[in-house]
Image (cartoon, rainbow, N blue to C red):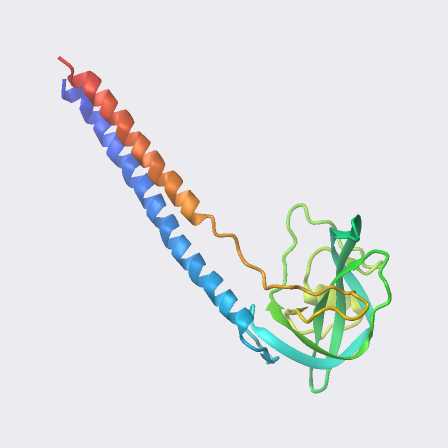
Length: 223
């Protein structure tokens, strides 16, 4: 009888080892993601520092300069405006700085058609965002209409006539202007942390596997 359990036992042990490994790996990912989220929360509480030439991603910074009299739109997002669903996008501006490369600034959400927004001298408090890569289903950029769907400073800079843009994006976080637009970001982005759920799933499957093997063994060994 016990010979009939040998192969199922070996298979169960192999699958159990894989499931426990996956569960433990997800627990490690959960701890790492918790550290990332804690670092982001701490960065939000720190005062912004002057924008350096090569700032780390998600750093809180402050930049001074003057907005060029040209802008563009990024993405598409519907928001509730006075109870009315309103289509809009992120307003992109080019901040010109003395003695430093211009910076592409995500100034915040605006409805489309876009209202008039201030240009000229500005001080921007925000965080550093890395460039995007287009995905499989990302729409093509509308270069003549200055509407972009991939937040890539190099490509956007060339389209706007600023090929020397810094290789990152500054996302504004200051309170909105008196006119209400553009509406800047309220918080820094936070990655999802579902790893604990994944870990419990793998550990749960390991438990189910043991129960199934125990029931099988009981049937085989029953006199």
